[in-house]
Image (cartoon, rainbow, N blue to C red; front, side):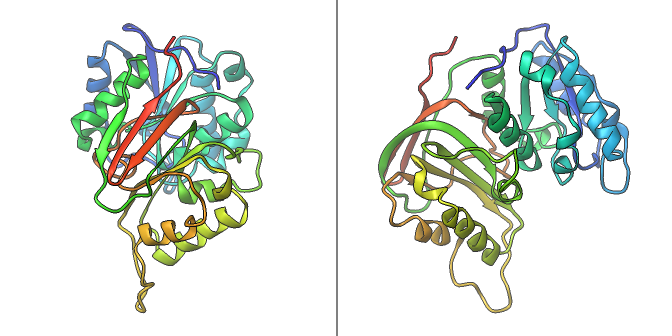
Length: 302
């Protein structure tokens, strides 16, 4: 997949809200990004609201479009997630982006953008902290975001808190929020998962809903064709009065038990403070040995 040009000190980046409105100012995030030597421009949506959204669908689409088409803007940060990106994705003209790609950064609802530009334009993007979450983000998560943007090498080695499935696999890294990936099923924004390393995370869902969505991926043949599975934060999960009887980890491992690729849990990414950056669309190698997990980017850094 194509990697957009990496950033250099002095470059301009934009912050826009394609989904929900901001509840608080993002001055701390702007200060951090500026400390990296970058210039920050703010979209109109940063200070706008319409019901729960950061302005009307038309405003949010136009705001994103303006930065997408502006050649002086080298990267676009989604200020936050929430809900709303799917309402504007089909109104955005990506022809300029296709000719001059740039980094799109965010997570959660921004999974819509990640999947769309991979599926349609074969272009890499960054799953990582957003301006709203930057003040609470761990130092290492913010540093991995900086490294991803400036083309500095990084990778991950950690110990899972629960039992993994050992093995080795390599392939293009992709994924994001499980609910949002399900939303794109059958649309132009749904990508081909075959032969890829899939990262999944979610927040605030019922356990039975996690089971339903994982089963949907399985029935669609997606889980069978993977080379590896990374499970990040599945946080603030809910249960019914009659307990579902399994944790998210037990649900997932149960549905992939017949496959032979590595599966790891507690990956440091998702709706957590230690939400470390992942470059979607880049080749990675995954090695899982008991509870020890190593993820490395294998493509040459240009």
